[in-house]
Length: 151
Image 1 (cartoon, rainbow, N blue to C red):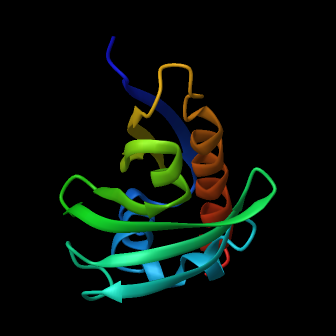
Image 2: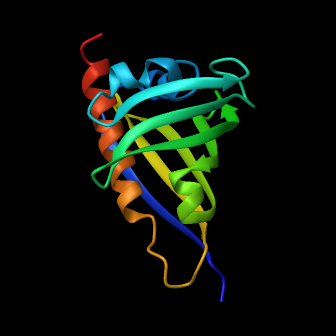
């Protein structure tokens, strides 16, 4: 039995696909300011903000606990408004053997459609799926959208 799984969700936002993608790729340092209800802080550990291969630590409250996720930007595709983060440490690495966030924004009308894909491998067959993290990601998207509307 395969322990690899994937959960996906889409959320419609008012911000353009380009602006939303820029926040999740080139403006990552600003995410705590744009999504204060979800992300407390983010620290750059290696590389440069907005560059593939950069390593950062995200600090946030998840399931009522203050946690950290150490991630590397694996892919930035500006043409398709797509970014991939691979988890390399922290809470998600403790819960799963591997974990990736894939975020793609697609133009839709005056706004965009944000598609989240979470790919992961469970440590054990009876471990929970990543649906609560997916809901966190969707909520974070809405929070960022609300703050982008104020810029």
